[in-house]
Length: 402
Image (cartoon, rainbow, N blue to C red; front, side, top):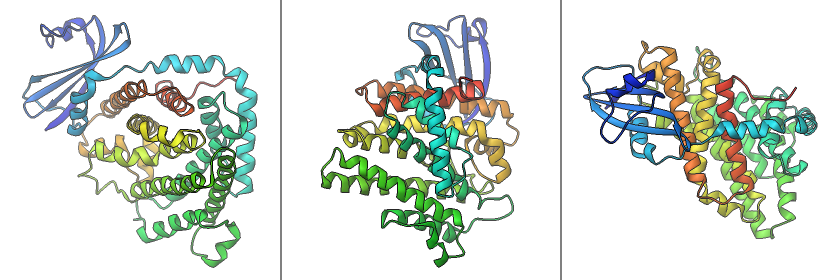
């Protein structure tokens, strides 16, 4: 079982001891040394080859233990690492940022539309600009109505996550039945048009739950009108059903995370955490929504699922790196805290480096898989979303024109 990780800036001399007749390290590289019961996995990420980043793995016997690391994660790296295409996310960010000033007007318009929509439906407007930016930067050449709809869906996901998170605190245990009632109430949006005034029938539920239900009903109605321009009635019915299914998956994944307690996750692996976290981050729902507006979108979305999973994992890990302090104070669990709880002696810098390596690995696997797909609105959205998620962590925030 792999049980340790130690990150280092590697010199050529330091790497020499790990070299073999088949693998030689360049003079500049960074890497990590994963140590477990009798073996050491050495990981190097080298930027000297033709295609940018290259990842090398091999195993050597060892007898010492470092800090904890997911054995599932390392197994994934061992089986897939050498087959990954490096993702030059910095080039994507640079390209998009070159056009940022020209999009300032659009960003301002979409931000205003998100703010007005949130106020109309009694939603928190805190994330209006972040939602607008995510849609504008990832869908720069699409029509304003599409960008606006995607931005408002992202805002809805932000608000739903915050509303459910309010039930978490370090001193109380969330009530699963109450969470189930809240989710069921939000999902009533798929049954019939609703308004926030219906909250009088269940005064014990927060007003924000009914606000989310009303906003979701509005999003469904507007999506349906857009689908009617392109698809027959049977296809529209199927899209409404799938939208309900994807939204349910999102909310159920959020429920799972709300019920995770820091004192009860000793059994949870990083891979198991990502199975849920890759859904709760919202990337699958937004991706499905974008695909649903494309003529061959649903088939495309099904084909792209493996790449989509790795993209969502990368975004989740990047989000965890930037939010772990707030989530720790709230009593939540994320990937950084999960590793810390496995070994309280692990230095935070090494734990964060562990997650950072995994996020880059997920990005590389995504790049490998997406390269086999044709270029579409969905693939463009995912490529840019992953790039800016990585950039946000690397640089401490999105690059925006003033």
